[in-house]
Length: 82
Image (cartoon, rainbow, N blue to C red; front, side, top):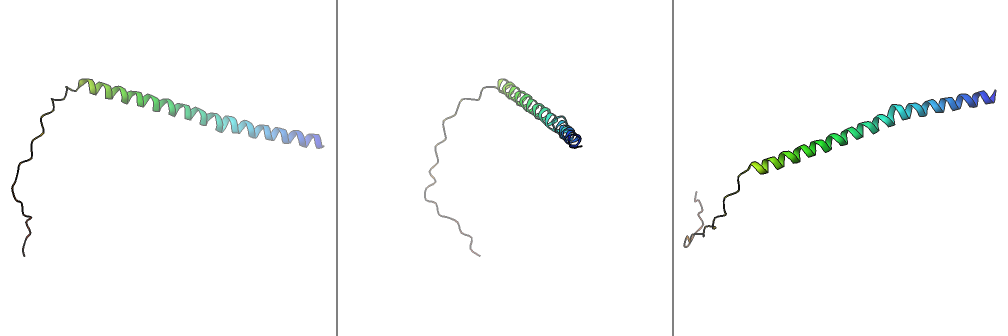
């Protein structure tokens, strides 16, 4: 009688492990791999798009000499009187 209970226990443990591996671990692994691949593809697409935009933009105009600040003379802060 005891060997039969032991056999049923091992069958039950085997079934639980089977369900765990094929019902949870493998699908999670496949999903993670797919998401990583999609992220890599999206990053590559955005990188290519950025490089294409950089090639299409004309060269920036040469930098102009900064304007000298004008001398405003004596400046008095304006305060509104009510």
